[in-house]
Length: 416
Image 1: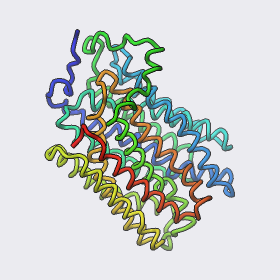
Image 2 (image 1 turned 45 degrees about the horizontal axis):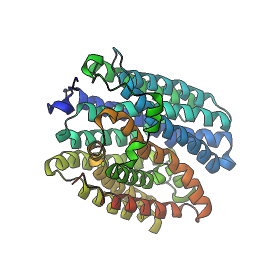
Image 3 (image 1 turned 90 degrees about the horizontal axis):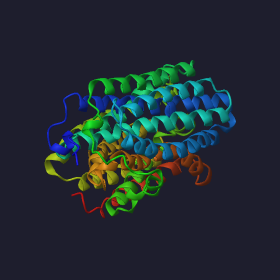
Image 4 (image 1 turned 60 degrees about the vertical axis):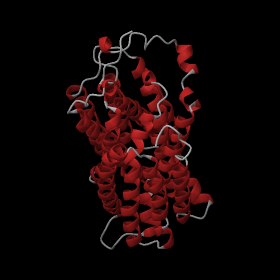
C-alpha cells in the first residue's frame, strides 16, 4: 500500500509558504466571523427591531450554530474522501469561501429576522466547511515537532482576525451590505492564495484505500472519535474554554452600550475595537512566545491550566468594577491568558487524533468545540442576561466555564 508522504508523515520541515498561509487563512476567516458577530449582525438586528434586539440576536446566532456544528465535520469528511486533480482540501477551501461570500450578500440585503436566520445559517455553515479543510492541513503537512508553532500561528490568526474584522466592519456601519461583501471577498482571497501558494496532495500522493468507505460505514463512524478517551476530554475542555471567552466577546457591543459605558466622545462600536485591539496585542504576544516554548519544553497541560485559571480571574474584574478602566484591564489580561491557551490548543488537538486517515473529519468534530461555542455564546448570553440577573451574570458564568475547561485537560493521557 502506498504511504502518505507529507511533511507530517516524513518528519521533514513543512514547505516555507505553508505557515504564513495558515496565518492568512485563519486571519481572514475570523475577520468575517468577528466583523459579522461583533458589529454588522448586532447593528442590523437593532435596525430591524431595537426593542427585541437581545432576543433576536440570540435566535439568529443560536440557529446558525446548529448549521455550523453539522457542516464542520461534514466538510471534513468530504475533504478526507475527495480525490481530485486540484487536491482534497482546495475544493472545500475555495467552495466554502465563495459560498460564504454569496450568503453574506444575502444577509446584507435582509430586512427581516427570518431571512437573517437563513442567511447566517448558510454563511456560517460554508465558513465552517472552509475551516474544516484549513484546520486539517496541520496534521496533513506539519511535523509533530512544529505543531506548537502551528498552533500559535492559528491562534494569532484567529484573534488578529477578530480585531481586523471588527475594525473593517466598524467602517461600514452606514452600509452594512458593503461590509458583508468586503469581509466575504477577503475570505475568497485567502482561499485562492492557499490553493496557489501551497501544495495540496494529489490522488497519486494519497493512500490507495483511504476513500473506499461506504456511506453507511461513514455515517456510523461519524462521531466515533468521541469514543476515544483523550479526544473526548480535549473536546470538552476546548468547548468550555472557548465558550467562556466568547460569552463576553459576543455581547461586547451591548455590554458597552447598556451596562459599562464608554468615555465621552467614543461610540460603542469604537469601544469594541479598542478593547479588541488591547486583547489582540497581549494575545498575540503570549501566543507567539508560548507556541515555540511548548514545542521546546514538550509540555502542553501546564499552559492550559495557567490559561484557565488566569482567564477566570480576569473575568471577575468588570464584575467587581463595571467601568471602562476595568474593561481595559479585562481585555489585556483575558487576551494574554487566552493567548497562552491558543499557543497549545491546535498542537494538543492534532496529537490526540485517533486516525490520520480521518484527520479532517475528526478535526471537524473538534472544530465543533471551537466554532460552536463562539456562535452559541450570544444565544446563551441572552438566556443568562434574562434569567440570572442581567449583564453582570455573564462574567460569573464565563469564569466558571474557563476554570472547568482548564481542569478538563488533566485526564488526558497522551499529552504531557
